[in-house]
Image 1 (cartoon, rainbow, N blue to C red):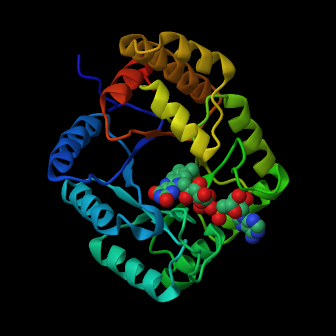
Image 2 (image 1 turned 135 degrees about the horizontal axis):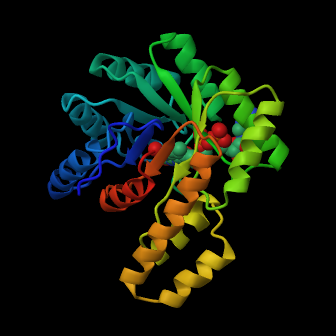
Image 3 (image 1 turned 90 degrees about the vertical axis):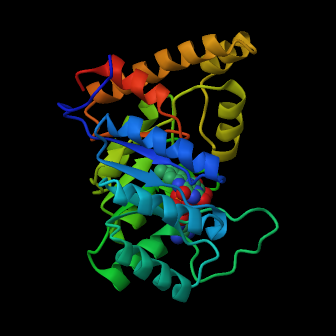
Length: 283
Ligand code: FAD
């Protein structure tokens, strides 16, 4: 049975990254068609550090729009000047983009920061000042605390600053502990910040990749998940099967807790999302 999401109450969305090769672009087109069957609210496209993937990001966004779908373009300000950002915003507007995911980004090691922006809140304020309400702006949220934050309290204040600067909603870094998400939303609410916070979901399909990503971005892999994955060694079938169970249970808990949507880090694959969302039907 082909899973569909036509009657979904809960909005879903997918993050894609720009392909590096023509073969990757062909594969991504097929992935998108499979994901479109789930009726996503939008697909977002990542933006490489320091603008390194700008051409690929914009090309992928253009394809999604040409396919009649809503595209959200990630945009990062680390290393950018106001003039270069103004130019990118004008291009995105002319392309017909209506949604942005506004980020600070990270510069590859060895690059000096430079540029006119220090934090994503400054980027959000700049986008609003330059383009008014032309874009729906999402920002990043970190239920398990951004790795460079001075403290949990400071990180929450940084998040609030992005919303006060004009962001409409947030997507979280991925996590496997739903308590962290619900606590974050409660704490933000107590500070008077009540925009939708959509949990970011990273389906587990590979042990080494997950551990590498999580070490980089500060997402915690609970001990029991890490040990179970280690126990499967190279048994990819068991890793995938376990990963689907964990991801489905997490989405189920989040849905039962009343989240405003589910945003999947697709890693340019469709199979894990098709399976998880089929298991969750009706959403
Ligand atoms: P910010 O909100 O600016 O926060 C960065 C750090 O600075 C935090 O520790 C914060 O607490 C601190 N901070 C903020 N304001 C202040 C202040 N005024 N004073 C002191 N400290 C402050 N990266 C990419 O390169 N491309 C992408 O496409 C991309 N997409 C992403 C999508 C999502 C949904 C998420 C969650 C992350 C994404 N990232 C992406 C990663 C992101 O760029 C990194 O996590 C980056 O390190 C922080 O970006 P930010 O926008 O959250 O920064």
